[in-house]
Image (tube, rainbow, N blue to C red; front, side, top):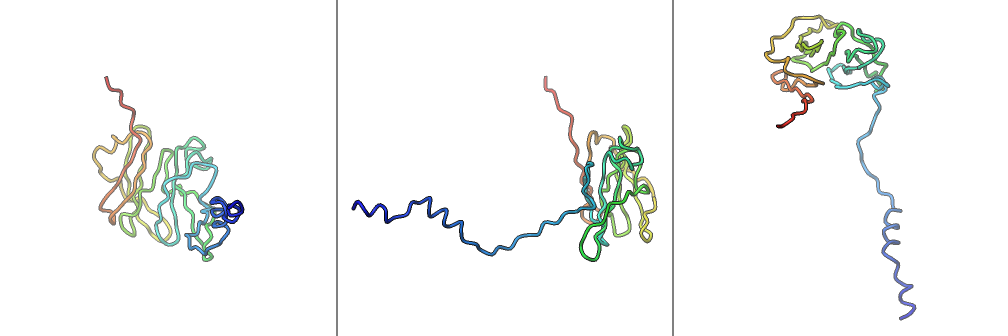
Length: 173
């Protein structure tokens, strides 16, 4: 009986042994968006087709408002090999205020949210070749009530708009 306890391995040895075996696994590949990554604040990426991604980049020296600009629209494209190119600034879609791509209303119409000072507005741009041409400001009641940092997205083929913002703290008395 004395020798029988050496015969059984400890449970911790079995657990360790279990991790020594390799099993093939299938996982999603992670790839860097090297063209969209920067030391600046890059947010709200929106895929617009044709291997193109638009996003907001804040506090970049090339932004229209300079390094204090809270966000201009930038673009990066994926090449034939699947690599993302360097991001390029889109001044045609940007202002000196905060600019945010919401998405495509339809295949040729882009919606952009703009926040300049205390005024928030929604704008339509129409695609012509590789360029976006300004169409008009969209009448959207109470859009100025979206204070603070605003983000959003177009959904259901342009039929729905989702907005999110950080609300001011409430003080209950």
